[in-house]
Image (cartoon, rainbow, N blue to C red; front, side, top):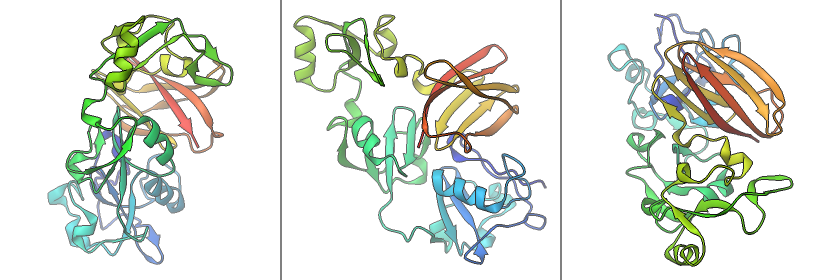
Length: 301
């Protein structure tokens, strides 16, 4: 059976034939990756995107998952779709990161391991520790993990409940696509004091989607909350777009000024559109599949 290497954001598993797979090595040991979907063997025979070497696939694992060695190979078998739902650490696996408490960020779009974005998470998300497999991935809320107290508010389960405050049309701040000049914009109300302030002379709206046209900063106005529509799912994570679509999808990457810098096609089904060769910066991607179109914000570090 053909091996298919896919990243975890879309909740995918690797279908593998242990007999035919070209297993990648890390420190001369077979390499495995702990994704949100399970513990998968890493090989370069049928990787996605195709044609890359083991170093690429191992780097992708370190970016979006957790790299392991010494996993009991019998735990990865046809009976569990070659690792789906399996936890590497519970089957002899030794973390290549050296262990320790693993941190996750609860974003609006899901719960993902923290890599180089801890400061961003503390500002715009919520930091959790020791999140079980069942609480990780797209549209998850880090269920079962421990909230550290670090995040944009002191109670992640009340995020968004107070609504958004509409101050007026947004005049973008030069050089900052996520801010408006004072006196304008539409932003989440983070606590009761901010709610009271908003009610004194501004308008409270239910959610970001209810913010009037022209009130969101440019970087937010292009983001569809949740990145999901029937027939198309897109998530930007690490240096890739993770796409699930019923039909082939056309992918175009733009700078925030609207300059097209990359285009390509993602195959129907579950796929990963690599952005590994792009310069660091803030972009937005437009993904079109059949009648569906999604626009997502992309931050490359």
